[in-house]
Length: 201
Image (cartoon, rainbow, N blue to C red):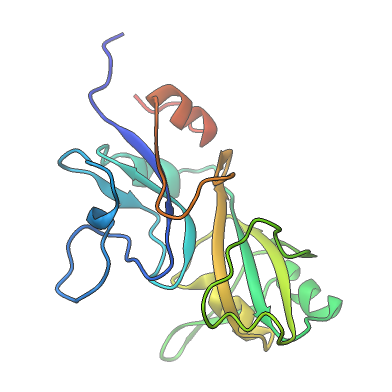
């Protein structure tokens, strides 16, 4: 079989960087990373400016459709720092589904997900203004849908503002021990195997 000319990358997107190469605004861009990405590289499943963690970049335009429009949903997992102490009954609400605002007069009931209280990750870098001494709760949340700012809206729905959001995995693609700003290139077969996408050619 002919080898693909496409290239596949995962990065640890830093805090305060947008998931794009071009912007009319004065913001940090993916092109500011210390890596020479090939022409046509774009981000898949973007993270907002204030979010961190695993981000996919590729030159293959089909990946968005294969990952997000597949009949089989693909799981994404996040570490979430919520303001104040979150009681178990609020976590149960997340697991069962909560109503979030998706438009001016529109609400959406999220599908059941996997949410649990976890310890603060030991290797996590403390950011300026994190206020670690203020009451807070760390959660691990895994879900298979991705409405606009969904995790942040889910946290607001249970009355706890999201203070930090880190995507740790998409299916079997793991952030692992990657440092903020680090880039890794993956072979095509390994990339799709880790995403549990079979028919990618």
